[in-house]
Picture 1 (cartoon, rainbow, N blue to C red):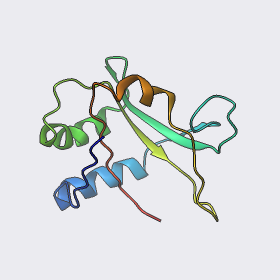
Picture 2: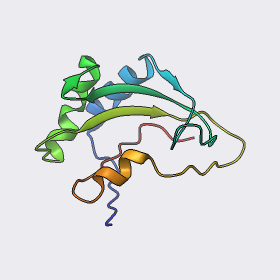
Picture 3: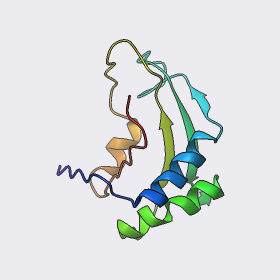
Picture 4: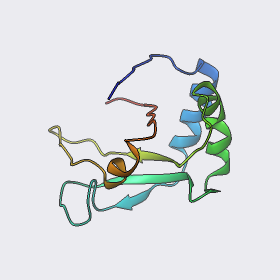
Length: 115
């Protein structure tokens, strides 16, 4: 698996607009990070795209520059994950969907904020 890191992937204007919209969006509690009842922490999510439908039109429009720059031909899923701050680093198992798509697809992460 090749991991490529690119700083300043988006221009400042697009990045700041996306960040502002994400910060002001509703997030929904998810009691498990990797697998159901794994007891490996919790996080919050905001679904943007999945099952061939757009759930968050404003954020979807704002990620279009990301999709264009990545030359995305087909989109499987797009969502925002929000992990709460902790006193220690928590390690989680791999997400189940990861096993299904890693063999023939590319996964992209855009980090909006760091602790």
